[in-house]
Length: 527
Image 1 (tube, one colour):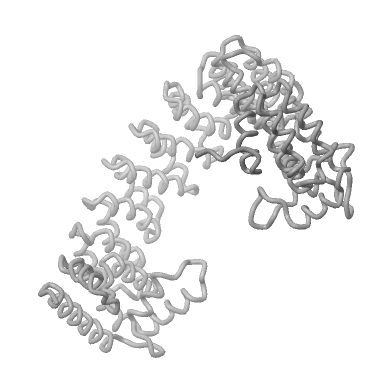
Image 2: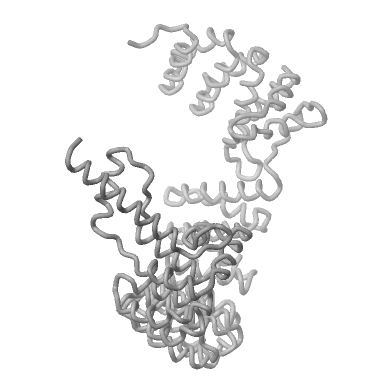
């Protein structure tokens, strides 16, 4: 055995003995040591309320006097450089009995322990306050102090100016929980609105925005933050103003200046607030954005008009759809997606959009509206000639998928389609080329269900082969390819029909037919 391995074993055993000795001395409750209960506190998900409550109650029963020394030891845990070396050696020589927890794991247990103790952890405030000055321990310390609550008020206030941005950010919310007076709280955190770290500033905005009952104090702070250099912070301040309702109307002028910028993110956030606090006063601003704006600014204007002046919003959306300017028309198409498919004029206006620069956006909008309508009324496609089995139509059976896969029919559905037999063929063929009745878009979902139906019928679908062959030789390449797939489902009788597809004018169809004939052992296998 190599010397390094021997050293590793000795170190591992020594560490194991140390851990065991500490375990014997630690406080016990119901036959389990404090470390075991702390681990349960730390590792139990919040949704497992009973298990979490059990562990927290155990920590409280052990008591602060006996638990706090261990919690502080865990909070100040650091990984020794030798830890990784010992762990690697133990792994390399197959020793599994030692599990030395990392510093992160132990610190999380300390945080969970202080959460269980709450204000009873107050005797440790002094030590935790000192830990705020240690860059490696400061974030753990502020979380422990937060769990202690009111007794840690002074320390948490110190955290607002800590050199670690993560500590400052956490302290903003923590100080709210220990400060009784709103004005005092806002005075404590308002300096963080100018913090060098954008995440701290964002947290401060959220802290100010939460003070709904002190609008006269909070609103000026939020308005001042509209000028923040970071979009996320400024937009959060703008959106937060909407939560103050009528009290925020005094911010109208500031918001007007806020949206008079080329930054589309700020325009969108500002419009969403203006439409809530001053809808009538803002109509001219929204309309101007639609007429003179571009891109997201125009889209934000249309959305705001739809919310504040529905008739005007619809009229301007329809006008945008008729625009010869490709960009404006494209924004109109995106705005049209917020309307129901039954909205007067929407369908006709979208259908009329057929120019190279807008075609793809038009098709996306059509598909979006069709899919949303399906979700609204149900996705089952029932055709007039659908046969039924056991009180359910073919369309309903085709939507009955297996429990573990939406792409596979359930065993009951397979049996139902087979029982319908050749009566199902006309409907399946119709689904192969079905188009939605509103826009005339090809329905890929219906076609896929038809292919599943043909696969379920198998050899029973042989009477459909002439119709499928006609589609294979048609002018629609996609329809021809789907016909090849459906033909293969028929089984042995499909061979001669697939042979004809080997000379098809579409390369994809010829390739698909070749692959399927090889799968059926009717063509030589490629070497």
